[in-house]
Structure formats: structure tokens, C-alpha cells
Length: 241
Image (cartoon, rainbow, N blue to C red):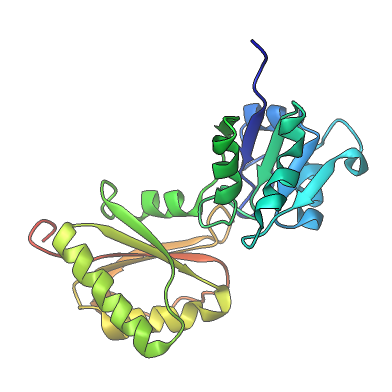
């Protein structure tokens, strides 16, 4: 029986060095690959240079993908696997297909019955949840909240109500330049006893991770949120009071 090619899901650092972010086993597997799919070829080359690939970077095949891919693009992306070679899928930061547009590439590999193997590496969502002290048995990630202030405020109220009724941590993210506006919206909208964790710059030396009730946050100076951040909310209800 012939060996099925493997789609390796390659995490990339949230910040800091590759050596501190990926396991030796993951790095060893990456070094065996010659074909890659990435959001951005330039940053992928920089990552692979730091991995210390055993061949010149110019000899690697790196194909870019995006969320608006047509069916024929899938065929091109998976061409190395169709030819019997393993393929690496890279995220820009963190884990592929988690808050990342690579999920459709993974789905296409499954549809063709190729093997899929996730490599161990950093996930900002998991790290933030670990460090938050909030409910880790039940949680939901919502991606980005609405930009419109009124819609966002209504969305926050809904998430707070859901959190209280289900004893479920709600996770969401924002672009760094809108982090401060989202943080203030949470302070303006949430109940005083709702717990909010702000996790910024994870894995970096200056990482900021704090969990406080909204009332306590209102009495503290606002954090300077200029790096990628994860926000986690847990409202008190009958199960978590």
C-alpha cells in the first residue's frame, strides 16, 4: 500500500524566536519539507530561514493562499500532495486554521483523503485561556466583534448574557489599533462583577496578562494595548457565582 502524503500544519511564533516557540520534533519535520502554502511568501521565507532549512530558501516552493480561493486554486495548492509529496501549511502567527484563513486548505486535503498532521506550537487563544483563570471547560471563540459602536455594544451584552447562563468563557480578538476602543466598550457595557481577562503580547518578554472584575478594571489605569491581544469574558451566573 502506497504511503499517503501528509499536510503538516505548521504553527509560527506569536513573537520571539522559532526555537522558543516550536518543539525540536516539529522543527525536524519542517526541515524535511520542500513545498509550502502560506498567506504571505515573504514572511514564510523569513520563518523558514530561521528554521535553518537544509537547502537554500530559493529552492523551496511557497504558494500563497487567501480566503477567496476558487475551486481551481485548491487543485494548484495541493498539487505537491497529488504528486506524492508532503506539504506544509503555515499561519502568519500561531496555529493554522485557528483564527486563520487556512481551514479550507485543510478541508480540501481531507476531501482528497490525504493525511493531516498538526505540529505542536503556540496558540494565543489557548495560552490566554490557560492564563486567565476563567472557565476552561466551556468556552467559545467569536473572532472579531462588530466595528460599529452600537452593534458592538449589543453584541457584548449578548455574549455576557450567554456567558452567565452557560457558565462559558467568551473569547474574542481585535486589531491592535482598535484594542483600546474595544476595552473601553467592555468597561462601559458589562456588569461590574463580570470578569474580564486581557492577554496581550503573549510569549513576548513584555507580555501583559491580567484578569479582574469590570469594577476593578474601571478603577485601574487602562492597559496600553498596542500589540495583538485576546479578550476573555466570564459573567457570573448561578453556576459561577
